[in-house]
Image (cartoon, rainbow over all chains, first blue to last red; front, top):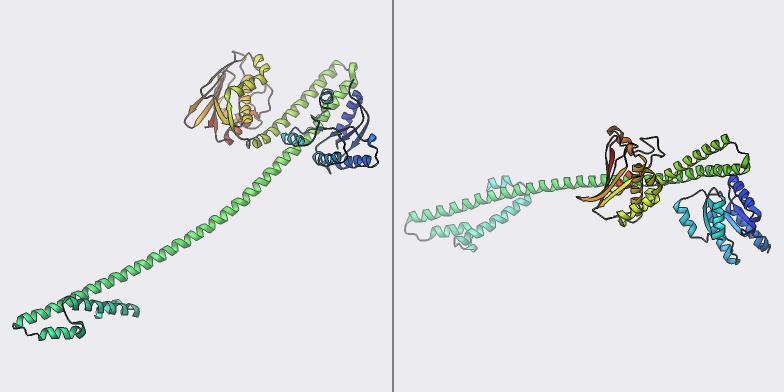
Length: 135
Length: 350
């Protein structure tokens, strides 16, 4: 039996990639709900709102984050998200899901509290590995 | 006296000469034991008036004095001419020096202008380099996204089709998958080319040749076994100071090429050795493979150029090897004979 989340926040501007992730999440049946936002800023606003409304129960329990996005990219999101987590005593894990396999990006990701760094496409094996070993 | 004056036309010089003449006269008076109070002419007179008994002696003495005086004057004249010549040559030297100085200043200004131009060019190059890196980064990212989507979509399609999939469709799927992997590999190679230059900044560290070879062998042991290759080593120089990833890349590419381009006619023997020659440490990798023709040598190190099509490859391996070696101040040489084998020599600056 895999871990199961109530809600997963997916932050990625690529529709097809989001579709693929969605299919996989449903197939593995590990989340009740999936919220999709197309850039970091929208995702942050969503999290701020759920904190503000004291509906922490409805806050996502896992964030799946792309790097290259318009408006606010993955790293800019992480910068703000970590402050937000600290100020509100939250500890929502983040998994990076990206096409980038640049060392630069991997090293940059290591500066943040990131549970995993996965190269697209997300496959069952990759996801289970993260799920079972890093979350 | 008149002659001297004519050769010294300026007033200042004239005064100077007169002073000198006065001094000479004083010296003359002293040397001839004359009384300075009385002046030269009166002294001569006084001498003349001395009661010499012999008129001849008196006359002789008077002529002596005149001759001495004349000699002094001639001597003075020569000295004056000399001094003038010296002054002129001094003036000439000064003007020459001034000329040289002016030339130097001009040159300095030119150099400064050149340096400024070079700084400008360098800046432009750096910025276009950064642009290029950015371009490759975003191009490879933008290319990779749809490709990885395709990869995922095919997985889903397979999942959806399940058992309904026909044999013809299986082979179609395989071809699609193969195309995707080749596309991905090309993008990977392209990004590798841009990233290896960044790795140049990596600090060189002492590395054992044998360690890197073992690492590479372990990495491709399937291929080595498949080729049934025999690898002989002789590391006369056991280690080298080099960026580790780069040395690994060199050995990896040369070894994998030897394995890939083996001859079906004979067993594959790969000889790897190192030695020192002059200021270089040489790494030599020799194989008994397919080899190539001398006219193909040029193509060998070019990007995306491949001499054989029967095996997989994208044609960037040797290009990268050459760049790494040359960027570190070394060089690469290759000898080959068609259907005998190839010998690659890497010259590391030691």
